[in-house]
Length: 144
Image (tube, rainbow, N blue to C red; front, side, top):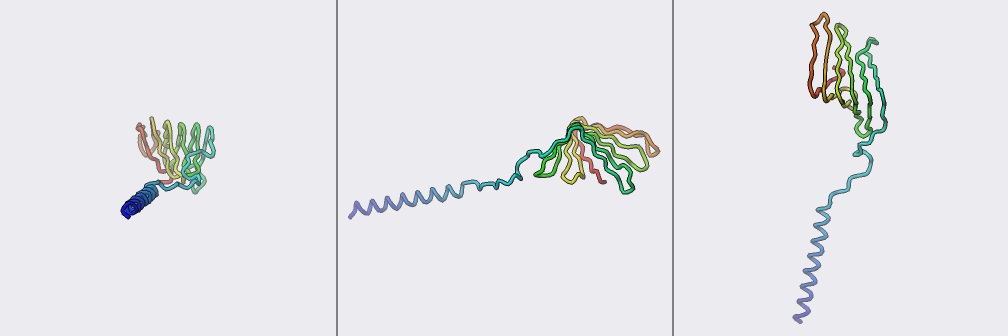
């Protein structure tokens, strides 16, 4: 009777070890991410020599955005800009010119983050002498 009891105990122990191994592998496995395309960063369109004009409520130019290339990404609605050039017009003064090596346009087109050799300049007008700013990174809120 003893050899049979040993075999039963060994079989029970092996079953417990196998069950524990299976349970641990289920808990440790990473959940599968859904394949819906939202995590991809593939562009859906590219525009060469991009120019966009935005007007104010009175039909006058508010700003002009130009870029050597615009690349749009559908999963988050952002756009990358190559050599962006922004001209912001004011009702009562000289326009502000901003240039950079690269830029990122937000999904609602409400802001641009310019990077690399950012230069902002404004000419002299009745409001002041004008000037120039140089930096490596700048966030511009377009509708403010």
